[in-house]
Image (cartoon, rainbow, N blue to C red; front, side, top):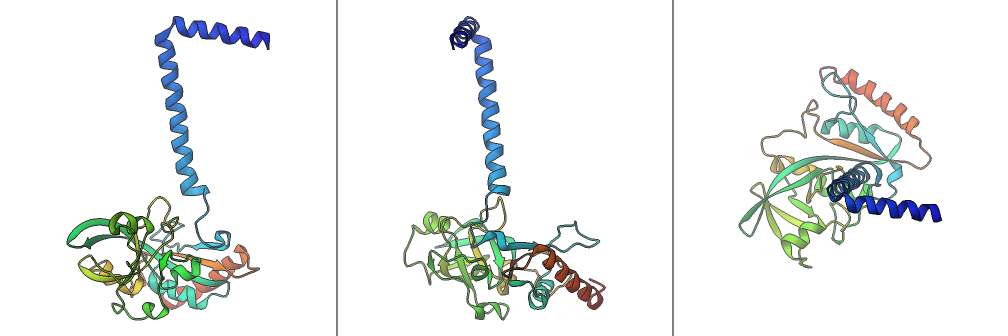
Length: 257
């Protein structure tokens, strides 16, 4: 310990005698520590931190890979419907896609990012709204029929002042009126890492949410990401084998897509 104290005193005297070097060293260390902290925070939020859903370890992402995409490509909505209805390994499957919105509240427009999602999105993920409700099964049946939306907790606070009577209020999304039916939990901002979703609308409102698109009917339009919740006891290898079976069926039925 005596030698250590001598070294520390000597180092301190050298730093005092060379203030320029000391300043550069301190700034360099500060920048290095700061950069590492930022990088770790990003990696932690994007890759390491579990999704804020029920039993996230039981979720599995499903990707479509073909000549037009990478190994981890998105899927079309018609393919999602076939995945959902034909698989034997998931207790539920959800589809979602990031969409920019023009949000109009009381005549004031602002940009907001949200997700267009399958109607079972909140129930399958086990995400219970902090206020109001999620989507009902009947809101996932006919295109353009049920213009409803769930907003984020952050948007509820910042844009609506935490109004406890927010459920039932009407807003315009891309010029179309939507009725707010619920507020997401405070810690939930969607499934897309790095993008905080501010609202969610059912996939049946795709044309209103993204005017000019035909994403619900075109099998070759791969714009949705897909996740499934594994049934108890089912492994990823078993799920992969089941989806190879489904993929072979779809390839024979729709070779042009």
